[in-house]
Image (cartoon, rainbow, N blue to C red):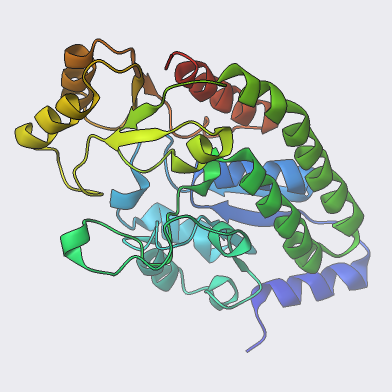
Length: 294
């Protein structure tokens, strides 16, 4: 079957006219990359609000409508959206953007993931056997994804290839220029207790220890016994407690209060219409919080 985007590209070639690609991103981070790399050659729709936990969304008719007219879907991947994206794609009935087609792109498939090969066993919590999907708080990995995305957009967008590559390179260069200052700001930081393993990539990039997690296992609510043990392990040490805005406050507040550590509730996603500067501003907020872990 000839997909809709192939027909569209053929029509463009025949007419010599430029037409923006319809890109659907699953999360604001992915939407940001689409705008950064695609520029005016893309129209971007983001499916997940920035203040929601992407693990637990449900497929909605509005998602299916957006996917039905998409030329390209940009997902985080590694099963982050497994609870709703497959159902939304099925309901959209757009074969050109199904997994395995040129119109489907996963960020996680472009980079090396942390915590790969974890057994798909509920005894280990809500695990992702393909690896930790929360790569988007690592600017270096996001730059790698941007470079790969430029190639995919070039495949779909014809004459924009050089512009896609140039914009991806500009993002990579900006990351390379900012990274040393971020690393210097957190140098010597004692570490952080997180709610979930959603900032592991950033901590690893900045060489800041992850001291523990409010969740005893990924996706499992904390028990009083787990929180007391977390406090016992780090009594007398220095650090910081960080949760994302959409995560419950009670457990992190207890741990921070008992340890007398700074507590931060930070956005996990940039704004819905984020550009490159909004993404870097988000990273700056996390870096500033981690810098208090002294």
